[in-house]
Length: 313
Image (cartoon, rainbow, N blue to C red):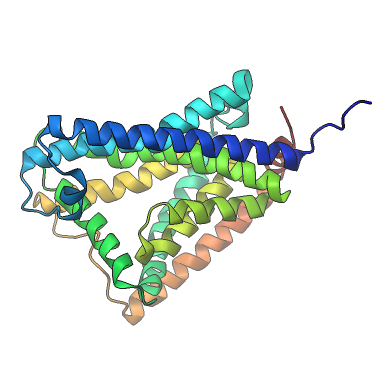
């Protein structure tokens, strides 16, 4: 008797379990490598250092931390994504992760427009997010992450800004989008048999994995936006590009502020005045209007994406 072929959902469960296994192995390898290399970089206790990093941390130590952060990005996101895709999808890995298709100039244009509007709208979302009371432990984790970023902005060597862009903008954009949009969104869209569910689930996991809950809804909505960019364009390169630009704008702005080249601190918490509230609301409404317009105009791409989500190996 011939066995019944696996359903799409069964294929997706298999994908998920194998992906989690690969990701777990690489996280262990990355952690072991970071702990092992830390003493060679002059760091005696990596966890203690990361928990107490500040603007007073020596620059040589911060440069060593940059190397550790780079290893973390590579082993947590980039390598697991590439290795899993190559191993599981084999010769179809570029097609399955939607890296085989470049975005058109039209895609880039509406993507940039959405990014600019979103950058303004997220100020309102961030302020609303901060009104939610959080346990002290979660606030401490947020403060620690922010202190690390601000400390990195103090570096003033010729390679400081390029290294920060590599570690905190380019590697996260490529690695996180490959994992969360190229793989996780695909898997959960197939599990739920619904593209929209896949986008929102992947975005939720994306936000949780940052462990910064004062900005949870900001990252959730950014993840949703990147997910729909993939859905509407059929190219993973579009959310990768927009993710990089979003990160790079903040890093360059923060770097220039801490180097005394501009007077505006982009990371400073805004006061929710009536004018800021109105501007944020308008930006949010315009974002939704543009999203609706793009959604209607990109029907052929959406249908192609939906068909791809139903294909098995």
